[in-house]
Image (cartoon, rainbow, N blue to C red):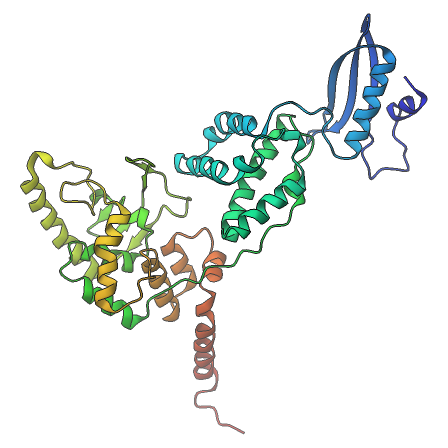
Length: 401
C-alpha cells in the first residue's frame, strides 16, 4: 500500500471533524488475488459500512484501483458502475419495491409516467452514468412540450423514489435527483359555483336520472370516487348521515375495484341535510323498483348510485351524458368539473362563516391548514365578516368621541 493510502487508511485527523474521511485497505488472498475494503462511514445506527471487492491482479494494480475508487467517492460518484441500464433498473425497482407498497392505481401511474416521459430519453443509459444535467434536460424537454409543472414534479417524485432505493440497494452512491431545479407549480384556479349558480344547476338537473347524485355531491362535498363507491349500508337513516368507507377505481383497459380511502381523515361520516335525506329515500324506492324490473340482469353491488343493472357508474359517461348537458341547460361554463361541486360546497360554507375545521372534516382533508390554503380566496370575505362582528361586539352602543 502506498504512503498516501496508508495515511488515508489511518485514524481521522481530529482537526477535521466536519467531513467523513474515506479510507481503504488491501489484503492478499492468494496469487494475484486481493480483497479491497473501503470504509464508507456509519449508518443511522452507528454501524460501520464497507464496500468489499475481490480484485484479480497485481498488488500495484489493486492499489491503483483503490486510489481511483477513493477519488470517485470524494466526487460523490459510485465506486464502480454496475452495467445495469436505467430501463433494467426501473423494471427491477417497480417489481421488487414499488409494487409491494403502492396501490394498484398509483403503481399504474408510475409505470405510465416512466414509459411516456423517462424511458424514451434516458432508458438506454447506464444507471450510474445518469447526471443531474440529464435529468434537468429531461424536465426542460417535458416543460417545452407543453406538460404542466405538476406533471414534471410528479415524474421527479417517482425518479426520486427510484434513485433513493438504488442507494439503499447500494447500486448507486449518490442521489442525482437532489441536484436539479424543478418548475414552480402554479395552483390551478378552481371553479366554485356561486349560491345562485348552484341553485340554477340543481333546477337544471331536475328530471335527470342522476339528479339525486348531483344534489348529494353538491351537499356532501365527497370526492366523485367516494360517492360512486357509496353503498346503502353506509347510509345512516336515523342520524341523517353517510360514511365514506371506500373509493371506486376503474382499471385501465376495463374493470373496476374498491380501494381504501386516500387517507385516514378521508374515512369520515358526513351529516346530510333533511332535503338530501328525503331525496335519498325516494331514490332508494325507485332503485328497488328498477331492480325488480331488471330481474336476473341486476348485479347486486348495494351501490347507492348505479346503472340500470346495478353496476358502478363510469365517471366519463356520467360527465358527458348527464353533467355537461345539465351545465348547458343552467347556462353555466362547460369548464366546470364534477369535482367542482365539492369545491362549491366548501366555498359556500366558508363564505357563510362556517368554522373552517368543520369544513375541513367534511372534505376529509388531512389538516385544516390544507383547507385554508386551498380556499384562501374565501379568506378576505371572512376577514371582513370578522371585522363587522368585532364592531358589533365591541362598539355597539358605545359613544364616539
